[in-house]
Image 1 (tube, one colour):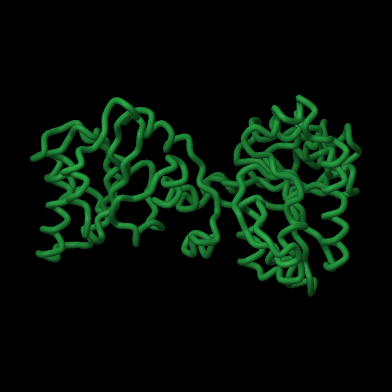
Image 2: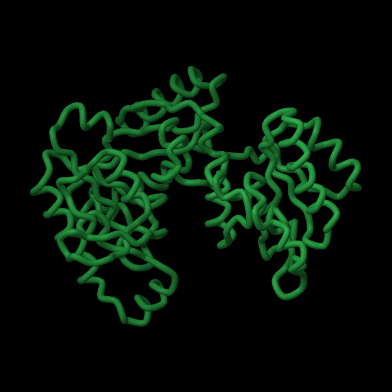
Length: 343
């Protein structure tokens, strides 16, 4: 998008089919509507004031949408009309239009609007993107190429994302040759991996677990590496030794029944603030399955006024919570200024 804006006065953007959505205000409709959350990021970050939200995200697939479609409650033709109308409006207001797909080329097939089909209907060329690697990346992209071929979608090129820096030159050389020899399309570029962009912020974990921090809300956009997540199964004494000597920005995980760890974390924050030893950047994730374990009201009350120590309570076991975090891929969010700036 930034590159296109250097070449064209007005760049349009549309995500024809979206899944994760947020509520925004449409100026032309004068009411609140739902759009894919990537739309907010692009519109606000790149100041796309010449187009309205209503035309940037024509089809949203929330929970239950697929069942309604299969049962005939949602019209296939209406979906296509909405996408075509949105594209026409954005095109009329723009010098060039950039479209974003959802996942791989086949996403949306169950409701008849997969990425390749939409690109073919709108006459768009496609740039395929895959994560770093050689054989695995090529194999993954081959499946996408076949679907593009089915819908007569020209492939303009390929971008390889998250390439390990020490394998950058190797990946660029071999992938460029493989795509040119096999498909006759260019490798447009390789993007080095930046691990920070994959580190979830506490705000991301709030969305993941559908909860909110019980304290330390001002640090919602503090990021934590999954490698620095630490499950506490030791004594309080050992935990305090760890928190004073280990990497300061560590996400600690404990069970809700460990009142000693919870209170110890709070006390250590207060001690650290008093002695001003080093910045206190640790966070505590307190876990307990819904309906079986919960934090005592007396303990929860102690978080009132504890400004600065991030604590989050989630209704999952420690194993479930840590597994969810390991499998979670945070997305760019317009409110996370630091990550957007890094990207």
